Image (cartoon, one colour):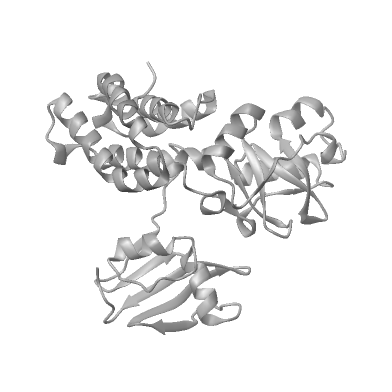
Length: 329
């Protein structure tokens, strides 16, 4: 049978009108996650009762205000329901289950800009790339779909599905224009809601979209996997080693990923940070420095030292944070 995560996510999201069906690829990804969640296997038979419980709450969530007010209550009740039905003490219920159910409620209100791969991290191909170039990129990145651009990444002409390329090209030294083999690109604005994007992915049978900013430039890209990870957490291949976003060096010193959101930084380090109009730690550092940061550059704010630890091109990769006398939550 299908994994419990796939069942809960699919059925619960169906109940709220987010997700009519999962692709085979999505099911495989979720089963990878499920294989690491041993406790979930013990409650597979609870899926149907849980779905019924969530459906019973649907009519109560008639607007966003209702959702905001009732979400925490319903998530807690769903966990209690699972724990009672399984005869398991609630504290023993895996946090993954609680987080996933909560994520389902957050999904509809989230926008593409919150989940997309940013422009600077995109892996794309120039239309003039050779088959050898594609083979090397595939080996290095492991992706199966790549945006194809003409001279500039703001001028994306299509999306190359690797399987299409190797089905159609027989000569290893072929230098055909990659746009010949690319499929039409689907553009979405940064502000598009994720539930709407997911519906588009299904109706148009696509798995990737290019995100554009308000000026029509390329802001990033987003895939079906990105949407699934918002619900079930990062989907890691069994051969991949997951790198932590926060590495503790000492009681007061941490090395964090520049891609870590400011909200997550606050939660993970128990810091009460001033509200900032930045999504990530890297964006915050850019604003504080006021120019392209260099390795070793330090800024101090509210009892916290931020030191640029690693830079790749124009992107900050790692930041060393030392907490002196910052306000804690």
